[in-house]
Amino acid sequence: MPVMLPKTVNMGLVATLVALLAQPIVPAAATEARVTISNFTFEPQALTIERGETVRFVNSDDMVHTVVAADGSFRSGPLDTGDSFVRTFPQSGTIAYFCGLHPFMKGSIVVK
Amino acid sequence: MRKDGKETSTELVLTRRHALECMVWAGTGLLWSVSGGIPRSLSLLDAAQAAEAAKGAMTFLQISDSHVGFDKEAKVTAVDTLTEAIDKVKALPVKPAFMIHTGDITHLSKDGEFDDAARIIGSAGLDVFYVPGEHDLIDPGQGKAYLDRYGKGTLGAGWYSFDREGVHFIGLVNVVDLKAGGLGNLGAEQLAWLKSDLDGRSTSTPIVVFAHIPLWSIYPKWGWGTDDAAQALALLRRFGSVTVLNGHIHQIVQKVEGNMTFHTARSTAFPQPSPGTADKPGPMIVPADQLRSMLGLTSVDFTVGRERLAITDTTLA
View 1: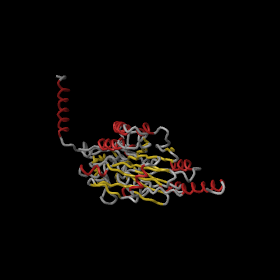
View 2: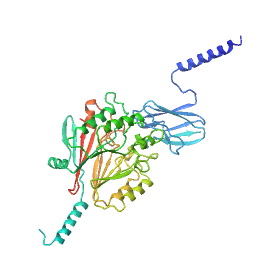
View 3: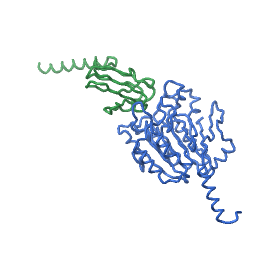
View 4: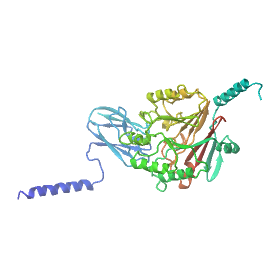
């Protein structure tokens, strides 16, 4: 019956979603890289990625931090412990960034 | 008695001028450090002088770095310790003229944090003069939340001045537009305003400057200084008495340089390590029974014309 087909498809989608949600929290796409903020330091301090790749900045420090591009092109909100900020880098080049609260904390993303 | 009125008058003028121009508020005041319940005076001012200072013409209080919203110490939140600090203010035998808050009122610039801070601090029933810390400007509007509450009658990012009892108070903002690798920043517009604010003012006017990040270089490696502070201090150098009050570093550091006294206040929320004693300036986690001995308030007493300003720090212990 034509009516059955969408139902089956829907169930298949639900099953896929459930399977995805059941997985541990990992980058949704293989192209997501990670910068960890820990003890007032961005790790790694210089991260090299492919063009179009996404970076997740995760704050695992006990102090709030922000991620601000030195050229002003982006600025995260306050990242408290456990919060993260995601940014995709579509163009090649080196993007310097720092913490807007603790400007001595610096890092860079090198986009190949 | 002098021989004639003219001579008396001249001498009186000279004496007053001398007293005011040479006024150096020692600022070393009485510094109490309470550790293990035992008060320890670290000061150059003896108890008799301190008692006399307490009878000064005006007392104002400084509180700083209340970080409302910070709750990493599960048992004691920043709201708890701010409430305790304000309870100490309410219990003072002599009501201060007003209070200044040298920034980081909140931890994350959230409306609820600003509301809690205003409710608790407001319960003291004192006028409060604020300057923002960097933690107060991280709302989506990058400072709008702060200025909506405390920006009335201020210029730029929230700087202003006012006079009380012959003393000129200047609230500066050095937490805006911080640059990668940089320190606190006043900016050209604020420095130009400061110059015009001071132009034509008598050198005998006592000046109190307050701002969040120290206006002197304490530990640049951790951002504890202000890049263009030297330009502000140059404008202030001609005055006979300048007191600079800051926060940000959550501990007392002070120095006297010529006619200028520099002093940083404790936080009401959490302590930070002494410069260089840790690899990073993060919050110090201390045993609950020691926490209150590392938090506190600053009180400033002075009597114009008596060459005296006493800065007294008390802990919450």
